[in-house]
Every structure is written in C-alpha cells, then in structure tokens.
Length: 146
View 1: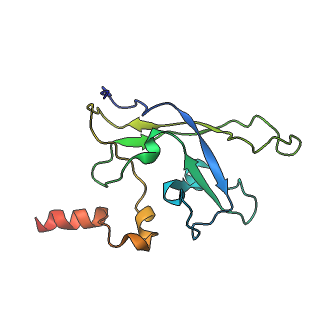
View 2: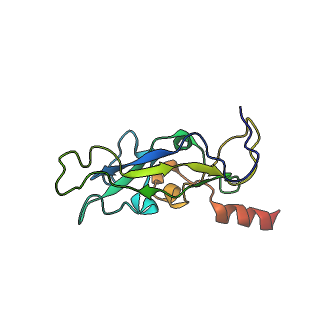
View 3: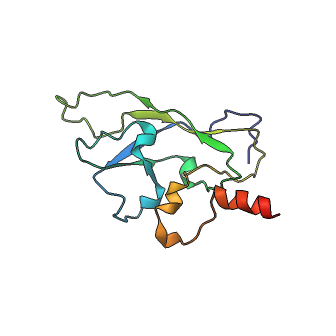
C-alpha cells in the first residue's frame, strides 16, 4: 500500500464520470447501487426535459465504503468540457464530457487504511431493502446514551 501524507491526494487517477440516461431510480439494474445523483455533478439536464440521469463513476473510489463517522475521502469538482457540438456532431454523446473526477484524501491516510466516502445518507434511506442502517443521528443519540 501507499500512504497519503496529507490532505488533497487523489485516490488513483482522475477519470471521467459517465451519465447514465433514462434509467430511473425505481429500476434496479446491476450497477444501480454504484451510481450517484446527477445533480451532484451538475449533469441533471443530460437527458433533456423530463428525463432521468444517474452518474456512473469509473475509478478506484467507486468501490469505497461509507460510514458517517469515518469518511476520509471527499469528491473533487468535475470539469465540463464538451468536445463535440450536440446539435451538429453525430458522435456527440458517445463519450463523457465530464472529466477530471477523483476522490481526494481529507487528511493523512496510512497505507492499508480503508477508504470511506460519503454516499449521502439518502442513499440508504432510499433503499428500503437494506433494512435499518444506522445513520449520523443514530450515532449522535448513542453518544448521548454512553
């Protein structure tokens, strides 16, 4: 493993994010638990009026875990750099215009330390099939009891 000596180091390489268009959150597909809400990346209008967009992240951070008290990586900003004109170029939409995404360390990370990112607590609350998953409010309540 490799240590990250301070805040701001990227986990792996910067990569594009891939808008997945017109698959609703109600539809369960193989990768649906590994997608993000498009408005986190300003990509909510990729499907046009009334469409639905999810974001597939294709780098090392896409397999990270979440625990509200242990988050040690944050998402970077994504750059929108369209190469082709959607109105005139037939290849537009064949690749992602959203580039340079990464998960960046929020503090020093020791080699072998597990990677935790924030899915956002709505990720759990919107998936009833996961059952009762402890959220931040549960941990705060437990701290008061202890």
